[in-house]
Amino acid sequence: MVNSIIKYPVRWSHLPKTQKVQGVHPNVLRHMCFDTIENPLSVSSANLLQNFFTGSRLASDSKEFFGVVLGFQRQNKIPGSVVAVAKRVFKFKMPEELLIRDRASFPVQFVNEKDSKHYSAYVLAFSNTYNKLINSNKSFLMHPARRGELENEIKDSFIDSKLVAERLTTLRCYGYDQLNICELERKYRLYESKLVDLQLQLSKVVASEPKLVKDPRSLQERDFSCISSDIVRKHVFLVYRELVLSKDLEILKLPQERLYIYQGMVNPIHPLLVGYEKDYYGECATIHHFGVIVKYLRALKNGNFNDLLKLCLEEEIECIGRLLDFTRNVELLEAKEVSTFNEKIYGKTVDDFEPGNFNFLKNSTKISWLTNAYNAVEKLDAWSYFDKEPSGKMGYMLSSDIQLREIGKELELDGHSGASMGETMRWMQKIRQMGWQTVVSENLSDVSNQMGVLQKARLKTAKSQY
Image: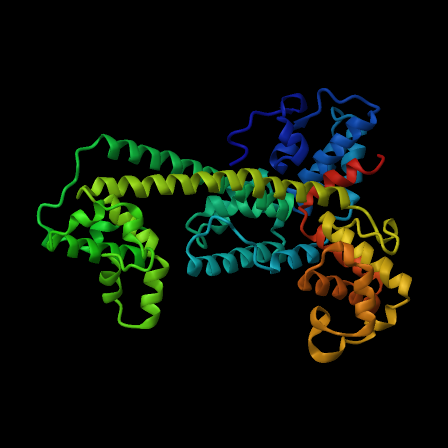
């Protein structure tokens, strides 16, 4: 498939920047012509080639890549410096697959999956597929250069094989952080599309003729389908039908406050709503939604169902607008900050963090709390307190132990809640029982395990001298 769409030889100068970073299919690699690469290489050129060959190796099985390197050695046209980099990469130890399997063993969350029943099956199938590709030595299929082959491999397992292949490739090559960013961007695009669709619907409703009910007796709950809440839709339908049949629709033209329970006076709608419920809980639910029910009823005061549809569309547009802002200005920014931080931390070791230095964590507030707690425990020489559980079987959050109170006095300026104090003390207990190095190592491993193989290769090259 690759051979049929590529014109050979493939010149290095013609490769897109993305392919120079992530590598190419082995069928393309064996026909490469490094026309702008000189011998000897500069450090920057060597690093770029190293990334390229590392990515290309990840897109190949070991035999394919070995065959390419062997072919390079036999060609006089390939600069010796290029062959040297390719041989160097071939000798590299590839990322530990066990760590990748561990990373894929926990559910990968997809923000766009709406049906919870389907979601569980989807997550399980995704994780199983990921691990199956790893265990069967087909991880090279989860490379951008082999996306088509991956889609064909999984087409019998997934209806949306194209999307699944994209997700598998992103997770494998660029890690969980980038997968999360891609999912949030996909969710943002869905919101944008939905917003445009809703605005179009609203413009049509505003321009349309009034939609009046000719025969109130024919009203059904489905006529109020624009109301999303089941209980609200039910009660709006029941009350409106009763008001129309009793010719009391004029009630809805009363001022808004007259339709609520106001100054101890029972309003004209409340008795109707309560009458529909047979138990205490149903009545409570009705009262809880009373304001929303009244709002929708008032939209029907002129008997025009397009007024109700207009109100529902305006509310949905406002809601989608808020979700758009939150996704763009909060979720995406936070996800990108986490990704940037993890890349900054990657490659650091336990020796980079002296006891009491919690800068391997991202949250600045948490770092401050843990640092102050660590210093307080050191100052009071209270580490032995964490050898066992606090007394009273109520945890650190509610324990009245004298030593815990003394530590708490040292942390008064931190503004702890019971929960944050309990979590902070659990960290101190973990440090005491497991040791500082183990705690730091676990956190650094979590960062490494969530990264993709191409991402790791790029970071290793950037942080080392060729």
